[in-house]
Length: 237
Image 1: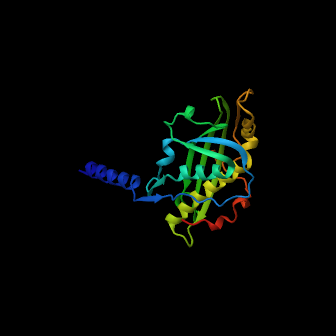
Image 2: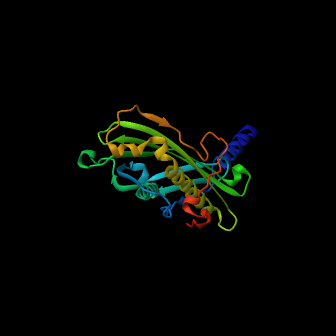
Image 3: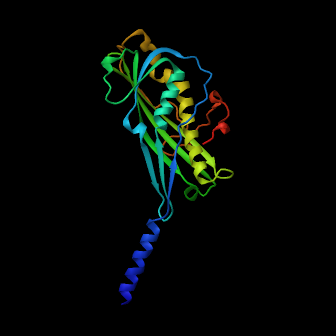
C-alpha cells in the first residue's frame, strides 16, 4: 500500500514538474525605418522559403510555463523590406517560382539557421532575450553559388512597463533590427554581392560567418551601433 501511494505521488510530482501554462506570442510584421544607406546597383531576386510565412518556435521551461512564438509572415516582411532598402530593384520569389522566368543580377536564398530565447525564470533577471541566426546563400544570374553568409542577432527587453508578452515581442523585434543593421553594413563586404552587377562570377565560392551581435554558442555579445535605424526605443508592438 505504501509503495503504491509513493508511486502515485511520484507520478503527480513528475506531471507537475513537466507541465505548466502555455503562453502564446504573435510577432507582428516588423517595421524597419528607412536607413541612411546608398542602394547597391543590382537587380536582386529574393527566394523566400515556406518557413518565412509560418515560422513557429516552442520553448519549454521544465516545471514552469511553455512559450509558443508565432512569427507568422514577419520574416518574409522583414527580408522584403530590408532588401528593398538595399538594392535598386527587388524581385520576390516563392519556393516554386522558376528563376528562368526572371532577369536578375543575383539571387539570395535566406533561411533561419537558429533561434533561442531566454526567459526571466531562466536568467534570474527581469528581461527576455532573443537570439536569431540567419543564413544567406547567394547565387549569380546563371545559378553559380558565389557565397554563403550567416549573421547572428541579439535583442533583449525588460518586463518593467511592458509586461511579459510585449517584452518578449519587443526582444524579438530588436533581434531582427540588429540583424538588419548587420546585413546592411556587412553583406556586400562579406559576400561581394555588388560585383555580380558585372555578370556571373568566375571566382571560387566564399563562406563567411559575418559579424555577430551574439551567436548561438553563448559567446559574449558585441555592442552594435544601430544608429543606422534610429533609436531602438521607438519599436512598438
